[in-house]
Length: 377
Ligand SMILES: [Ca+2]
Ligand SMILES: [Ca+2]
Image (cartoon, rainbow, N blue to C red):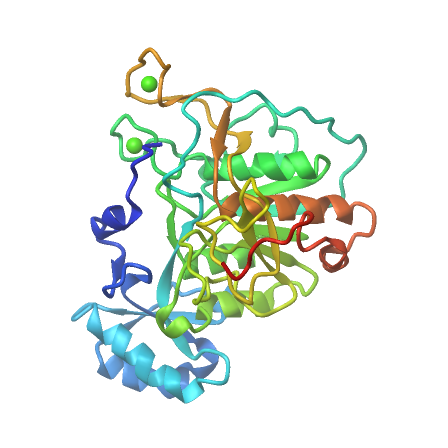
């Protein structure tokens, strides 16, 4: 991890994402997602504007179709989304851009430059009947995690995918989160799916599709999100939530831009099953980087969290103060990502008594103690 990673500059340099100026909302270029229930009303109009239907759209899982616009890729989907979305302003979304989502560690902090000692815990004996889904950067082999985690080979973490000899900006994020869940819910099974690349980038269609395919889980951790055009709910995500088993709880990070007046999705979905988690600093107040809004449900510590991390030695050399990018099984990291993972673990741990995620959510304190964070700061 490079502590000076500049996400805006990094995203500007990628050709598979774009922004419309403010650098807060990011989208897949030339893509528009359409609610399949309304596609007959919209198909002529979209094709007339140059949209091509993507036959690989996840209609079965989500009821969502994707249109690709080859020409004027920036303007066409954006204009169509704005114009057509007005027709359904108070109803469920008819269509949306394919919003780019990103993991939510705090970049300026980054993992620690030296290994941290392990936090000891005693795994609980006996069969676990709770399964936690983690959609993230995947999972690296780790002694803490091997006996509780289901991970396919294509869901393993990629540490230096760009091959520059340095740890990629968000590599280790999923492994770190799995360790937090394990710490708070030692007996829970963990099912990992890789949706974020090693720089922490994905889009709503990818996440929604994986969510629909995750199978039999009780709680899903989503330490990621994004901002949408017009602050409207992201369509593919809304569809995925409708199709998910009604008892499944989603725990989502509130985001790290220090924004207090815009919804961050999916955390901002106003459903009881979506638990939005802000981060507290060491003083027990809302962390300065944490987003906050009326949609935030809980807050947990999110600064200088220590958890599991891949073993990696980057090309930066050692000095008198040690090797700045040599990671030996543990790291320190900050962000609403890790506050959310703690809530996920707390829910899973409480479920081992009554196996209901919704009841577990209701029984959790919104805040870990007094004093309340300074919400209005
Ligand atoms: Ca790299
Ligand atoms: Ca090194």
